Length: 127
Image (cartoon, rainbow, N blue to C red):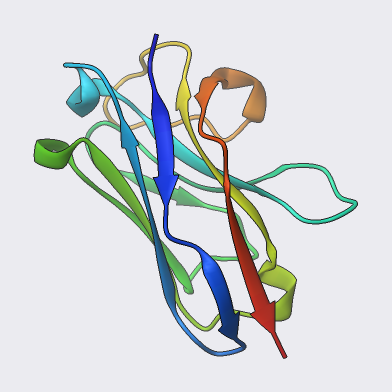
């Protein structure tokens, strides 16, 4: 069982930056792909970013060039740096670990591939 926990979040103004972090338990963290998803009020949960075990990153078009995903294997932590935040980024942000291991240059972007989820952190962006 992989334990996932997010940190960070809060209320910011449009144009501000915010960093979320997430820890995932287990001795094989360096072998994990990791993903960030978000769910806005009244909307379905959607993919935001993912990073492969080798550090290859994948982004939703809506956040590309504004958000950066990275990880620190020594700290079992993955980060989501969010810059130039918009009111449309307001959502609960979830960190997740896939059910399976993937090759080093790939991370899944579909929610169904992820079996371990954190409880989520609220990010609110005011205009």
